[in-house]
Length: 353
Image 1: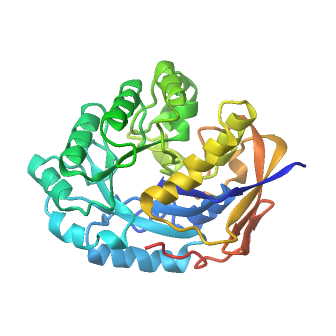
Image 2: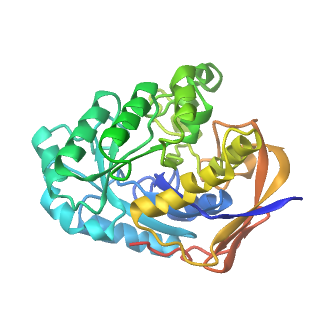
Image 3: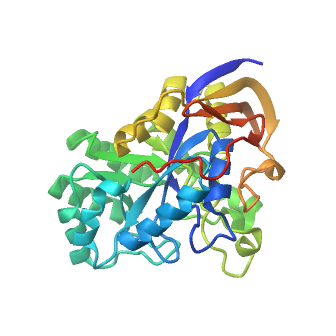
């Protein structure tokens, strides 16, 4: 066994389904899955039922998570067409503002331009605006952020044209005001995998072409964060007549990236930046001392859904051979995970904001 110590991962894009859809996941199972993936902190999205769009919903969600979470946590506030001014007041109690500029799972699509501008105008310049934006919407988000000098974070970039546009925008505007993330499923899967996975491969944004995937790897120096976009649904839902978009990913991000390191596609330094240092910088997080993970570099194994902690119990990476296994997780000096077992109780996690 060859052990290496790394900072704990910070996953800035998860959907833990609590409250509103706890048959898919909840804060207890989702944060247990996080620890099993070497993730010590998660930032949870607002498209719950009901959505997290005001102080009451934020308070209710925080109370639930404080009782259930095994790792540390924070939340985004969801943008609606009528909460711009009130939302800005809540800005320092959340990870950032989430604006859905494209159709996704949930009720929060932003369709009104005046409301969109109001959010960009009123949101504090020192707090991130995270956007679900695809295609033309990417250019629109960058334009508004530049016009109002806001900190913009573009979620789950998936296409060659998008990452190339972001690269140019960083060069001409700002590499610190503009940041972006990619997901493991867009880095490791393509449209060709749909024939094998069927509706399990249904995600938003959709899987790209091999050219899109190659462009993400080829522009990895432009990418700031790798985030799972952990979006669990039950197998029955995914295999039903109207399968919802999304795949679980908290437990597979680390082994996939460790495999990329073993294959020479990713350096250790870049791995740490993408999963820990940059997420902390962008969202203003301070990782407490004695928080780290240990991985066995020699381990070689096959991803198997039967070992997952996530409540939905499946992965699109089933059967993939990976290199590098998580051995232990220390969170604030406490051994929170070791050798396949979560060792802390629900409620151990702390609110980050």
